[in-house]
Amino acid sequence: MVENLDPEVVAELKELGLHEETANTFKGDDLSWYCNNTPNGSYHGVLMNVLWNVNYGAGRRRDLIVFAICTPEAKPILDSQQLPMTALICCNPTKGKSSKSKINRLRRFLIQERHQIDLMKSVLILPTIKDFLWREGTEPYKIKVVRKKTNNKTVSIVTHIYSYLLKKYVETGMKFDGPDNNQLI
Image (cartoon, rainbow, N blue to C red; front, side):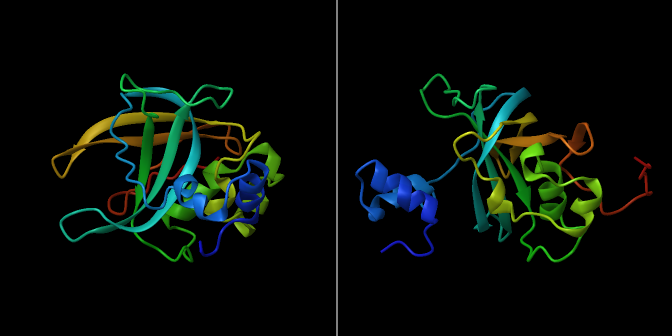
């Protein structure tokens, strides 16, 4: 039996005439998302999975936010091997309690008009990261991707997301040391 299965996924499976156990193939929790096949550039993407506390090599654990690259109409773009193009955002594992945590910054950047949350409300309340996962009718995000080597592996990293709230691209990376370059919005 699949634990903690989203009721919407169960309903979709039943509609397709499939059993709940099939959800493992849809959830992607046991799949490996290599996220190495998207070249540098600007794309549309939908949030397709969040992988918590993943072994990222060299004894490091990371939370991975995985995007499927798509057209503006949310149709997946396939690479030359007919595999879905993907990219990711890598975060330190967190419980998401700090307003400065990367995952909370991302949640603010991912807010869209459909969430009916303005900038002030986003300081007080944020949907969970799973609320941003793709569902039928979800508008794709505008993202920028850079491919780079990490631990001798090529990875396609989402470096910027267009923020509906801020009306501009925002950097997904964070700086912890150095001068404070924050500017008023």
